[in-house]
Length: 302
Image (cartoon, rainbow, N blue to C red; front, side, top):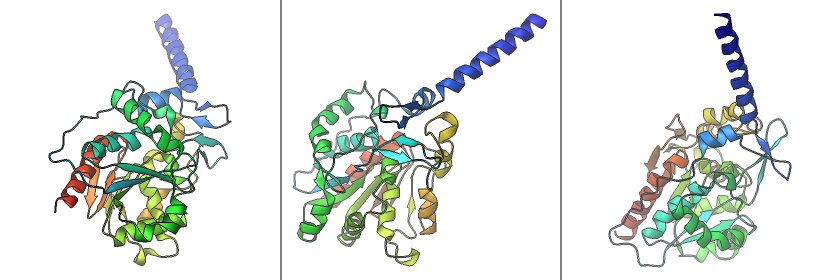
């Protein structure tokens, strides 16, 4: 009995030590942290559930989708440590696969035209569809449009776009929520009755529409969305996904502006409220992309 107890204690100690080291975030060459091996195993996958849906009567016109991405890499957490983030590759690329299949081209923009930052540690390396579309879009990610230039010089007269898309990744919380050009783009797209597509942390960027206003004037006041839950973000340090607590809580800010987040888990929940289409996490990307593609096809076929 004593030997069994000793063996059990040793097993527990070894398991604890293994978990401790596997759940520590990994520091990179820039002094920022990527998620721990344990967190990566839980939260990422080498493949996706992209189902290669075929759409009836794909679009053949000129209207496109404008995808607004972050150009910032590192998020400074509440404890001062830096989290290496950007846009999540699945949340960018899997919906684009569906949109392209439905006939809609996608342009890429960042606030000033600097390169799109991608969470490469979340890239599904064994997914041939994602790898193919990433290779095709690599030049667009490295040389995106400048949102500032578009808003100042082209937006008011533009008829190029049918929707705006904001992918997730914690990078959507960097630079976009306080960007005045994004504020103007969101209001312009809303006035033009265009679709807004946002997934995972992407809805954080919708806070830009509140700049200079209040809850009563916020265009998404009264809307319901699917989005990455604040409660799940709070668990990030426990598994080493993030190297510290979040610097600010975006869902809470949306709630104060009258937005209701309908999901409690980071799952495949998607939601359509008027022309705002949202998804909860990378797990929702396939469903989100099909919802968006079908909504845009319905719009152009009216």
